Each structure stands twice: as C-alpha cells, then as structure tokens.
Length: 238
Ligand code: ADP
Ligand code: MG
Figure 1 (cartoon, rainbow, N blue to C red):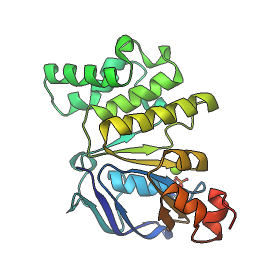
Figure 2 (cartoon, rainbow, N blue to C red; figure 1 turned 45 degrees about the vertical axis):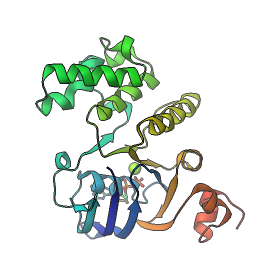
Figure 3 (cartoon, rainbow, N blue to C red; figure 1 turned 90 degrees about the vertical axis):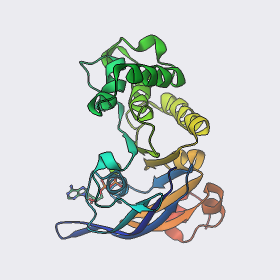
Figure 4 (cartoon, rainbow, N blue to C red; figure 1 turned 60 degrees about the horizontal axis):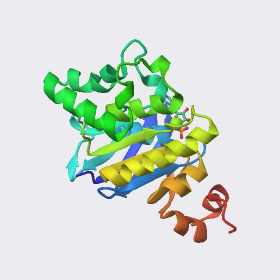
C-alpha cells in the first residue's frame, strides 16, 4: 500500500515560509510528478514526505497513519538520489545491498533481493563492477535498485535524470515509467522539466513559491489550466 495524504503541511526555514501550507492526496499506485520552477519548494516537499526534513506543522499520512514525527526508516519510503550518490568504492552488488545490510537482513535474503532487482533493471552482468565502470544510465539503475530491494510503499525521485545527457534522459524516462507499470508502486517524481511531467505523470502537481497551483492529469492541465502561471508553465494557450 502507498496512499499518501498531506494535510496543511508547512515548512519554514528561519523566517522564510518555504511551504506555507500544502494539502494533497496521492492514491496508492499513482505516478505523481511535482513540477515547478527552481526554488519553488519541490525538493523540500519531497524531503518532508521522506522525513529528511521535519515539518513545521501539519500531517503526513501514509495509508492513514500520521508519520510526520517518525524518522525516515519508519515511513517505508525509498528515496532515489541522483546517480552520484552511489558509493564509488563498493561494487554494484554492495551498493544495492547496502540498505538491507544496515537493516540487518540475512545474507540469503539480501542475495535474493539484489539478484531480483538486478534482473528487473538489467544489471545482472554488472554486479561485480564499481560505479566508475558503468554508464550514466547504469548508475542511475543502481540507484533505483537500492530503492527496489527495500520494497517501499512509495518511491521518491528528486530530479533523478538531471545529470544525464538528453538522449539518455529520454530512455531513462521510459525505463522509470516501465518500472512503475511493472511494480505498480506509488511514485513521486520531482522535476523542473515540463516535458518530463507531461509524459510521465498520472497526476501532475504544479508548485509555485511553495503553493500548489493545480493538481490534475497532464491533459487536464493542458486544456484547462487553473491560471496564467499554470498555462505559461505547461505551455498551453490560455
Ligand atoms: P526546488 O527543489 O523546487 O528547486 P527547494 O525545495 O530546494 O526548491 O527550495 C525551496 C526554497 O527553500 C528555496 O528558496 C531554498 O533556498 C530554500 N531552502 C531549501 N532548503 C533550505 C535550508 N535547509 N535552509 C534554508 N533555506 C532552504
Ligand atoms: Mg530541488
């Protein structure tokens, strides 16, 4: 299960109101994209959901349970960082296995989960390599593998493709949406790229200055933008 609900979630840094108050419903299994210009609070909102930042106020419900005061490990979510967040001195196997080892899983369970993730991600032949000997796309798959083995209620992606070149980015978009179709797990995907949002999302959340401007299916935002900001940002004619 992976239904996520935000109720009046607020975040201030010092005196700056970065997230003045967000309400949002994400259904189990949905692919939701947070999109908005740089500095609008996308990463902050994702980090609040992940538990990497504490909320100033509000509730974060995962399958009906408020986790706003729980540490990240108790939320059952997996954050996928950009590919450079891999450990360069560890093999692909050990990079993928790292979180499971920390959680005290047995060697046999770790092996089965890592091999299963490697199969899903086409990394079976690369398990003994180190990240430096992989392509950018393969590195990104290792980062996703690390999340898959934890069997999360939801995957959280923060601009995972921004380090990749344009052609690879298009491939990886397809891989990630393909993975979503296979796993049917809730995914929240942060990007400032409108094309990524329009092509990947079941549901888009448009943010500006920490506020939700509109929530809807890509085509709804395109044909029926709530205001000029959404229209301008999504590129529709209003
Ligand atoms: P985005 O991911 O949409 O580019 P962020 O969530 O990173 O935006 O940042 C939103 C705003 O919050 C920015 O103005 C940023 O400078 C500010 N901010 C983010 N993290 C911190 C922090 N730890 N301390 C102070 N200000 C922060
Ligand atoms: Mg960001």
